[in-house]
Image (cartoon, rainbow over all chains, first blue to last red; front, top):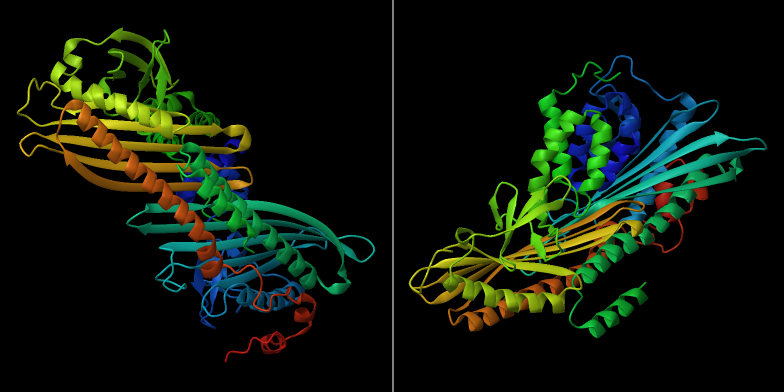
Amino acid sequence: MEAAMGLMRRIPPKHSEAALTALLSLLPHHSADLLSQVDQPLQVLCDVDSGKQFILCEYNRDADSYRSPWSNKYHPPLDDGLYPSQELRKLEVDANDVFMVYLDQSINRYYEGGTSSVYIWEHEDEGFIACFLIKKDGSRTADGRRGYLEEGSWEAIHVIEVVPLEEATARYCLTSSVMLSLTTNDESSGNFNLSGSIRRQMNMDLPVAAGHLCNMGRMIEEMESKLRYSLDQVYFGKTKEMVCTLRPPSEPVQTRLLELISKRRP
Amino acid sequence: MSDEEETQPTDDQKIEIAKWFLLNAPAGEIQYIAKDMKAVLQDETLYTTAAAVAFPLYNKSHMICLDFPDRSGEVMVTPFSEIGENEYVDPRTAQVAVVDHVNQVCRRARPANDEELPTPYIEEYRYALDIEVTKYVSEAYPKGICSVYCVNGKDVEEPGMDFDLVVVISAARLNPQNFCNGSWRSIWNVEFKDEAQFVEVRGTLQVGAHYFEEGNVQLDAKHECKDSTMLMSPEDSAHSVTTIIRHHETEYLNSLQTSYSKLPDATFKDLRRKLPVTRTLFPWHNAAQFSLRRDIQKSLGLEKK
């Protein structure tokens, strides 16, 4: 299993779907682990009742059907699918509403697009797991305006495991992954593709008085801000550094100046 | 729940999968992928079959550089230097290396015989270009290697016929402790057109970077360009061609840097803002108390105009 994860860390991200399929066929006994630990590009379906999109993932899947957080129905319909309890479903409905507003604010409001979904279900004892998903497509032809990117997508998966503790507090364990893919294609720079995923974890013990939704929301917001910083450092910083190490630019002074200027920009 | 009756892949399918993983290894990482692949396959025979096919292809594609056993020089494993099964010529030292692809070492070397090397006429051009390119590479790349081969017309003995040379440049930075690896590969096809007396130069540049500390992030960039110059004496042609190569490679690096400076804006405007529109943190506490989305939007001043 460790070897499988090693392979996933090295395969080019654009091939990650094919790689996962291959590993699943070779290691069927590890399929549950593989599916939950490997980040895959997110897909969406349209809810038949509301016409709203919802995101597909392992956490709302049963057999080959996916449950919509808007109507709570399986697509395609399933006779005896799994559903969250009434209490958790209420939390799920609220979470979806609030998260959608959070998403609206995070994505430039002048542009349509972006889908969010939240799925909640029982976990051991009195705990539960909540999964918050975001998918945004910023390429020329889809949700984004005619921008610089030939193709671009931002996807985030936040999985929070909530376990009640004594004294009206609960432990929240958050594992977040952001998957980013950017492609540009033009005369002078040819074909340029930067893609991949970053994963982080955060644990907090918080009082339940404020409400689970409030606690989870704050953690996610803090995590997203950390991830955004990481993205800047890793996606852009590290890979660019490598390019300049391979073949240093011939005007080192100019580059250093540019780097200083870009670092100062908020 | 899901189709548990999925049939196990056949041996042939397993070999294809192993080959695919090996071939897609980033620069400098095939041995790590090899180790993990062996563990996943749990079958030495199948793995060996896959490796025997995948390694030569990978090595040639990445243009790996191997030392001669007696340290008399290096040989680059490329499609252009391949003269026989597992045999690669190094024109600089006029030797042929016998290569063990799976272990990525040169097993032995022998002097090249005359049929394996170009004629003196061609060699004049090849040698002159090699000198110029080597000088350029040593200036531009901290750890670059290069070679020049004749890929067409190596038996041409005097002016009157076309011939083609190819320049290959490869640079890799491997830093597994820092979880970051990268590679630069350029292949320049140089076609000497005798009748028209000019030289056509076509380049393919490929850059890759892989960062894998908190995840898996990879850069994959490719660019093609072309240019031309007059066909002159070997030294003058070499100088001119190398100037072309230097110019285009420098331009490409500059445009990569420009891409990098534009991307953060494009990403963070098109895809994901840094702060919410109101530039304050999201009011989760209030949000959780509202049952209607409209109320939340009103309180945040988000009404559509």
